[in-house]
Length: 290
Image (cartoon, rainbow, N blue to C red):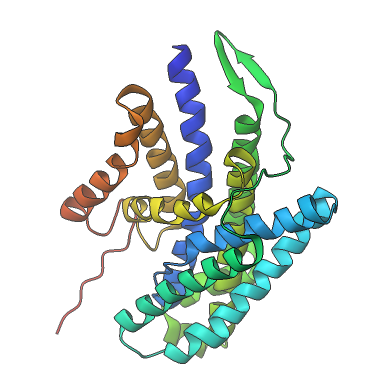
């Protein structure tokens, strides 16, 4: 029971972080039909920028994270305006290759400034143990779950009730109808990329607080693909549920069957979902008639 509880909290921590990253995938895909293969590298950039502000410059955590969010918004705006917008109307494979190239550029940017050696991340979450029954749980994982859950709730409320969030949902459903209602689709695209960059940066901070700041942080992006496929590429609730399911699946598999299988099982799930339900659990089924 002790091991099960520890694995469950580990899985929920990873799942909450996966959900944050998957949220960025879903937003960009819903708004512009683009799958951003550089999403994991947004995590890497966010983690290192926060490390620079807090660990190297000595700024308070609140200031460092706020400045990281501002720079993440600027990064999202720059990528959308100068990288993706010129490709509107181009074949989807061209857009995919550009996001892969963007991933390499962001990694090269980080490596040229901070090098390739991992750095200890200045902890902002208290690191002590909490006894739950007979299980001993690190407090940083519990707090990370709470922080990630709060962020997911904030973004969910934003999409449901704010004017910009409603405009994003309208654009995702029908761009032509949104244009006819006076919604600027270009602004919605920019907003989607900005929010995706912010969610990735915040997830990068949470990951780096647990494992340190290094290139490993960017690997989260690849591990999130089973999440978005499971939940549905165009479903925000699916991104949240898919993150929790994959996070728990990784933790249980690693704990009971070995760490090697924990990295493989999510992709086995990905293949099965594509075979049985290719649009995911909550994805919109699109039927094209020609």
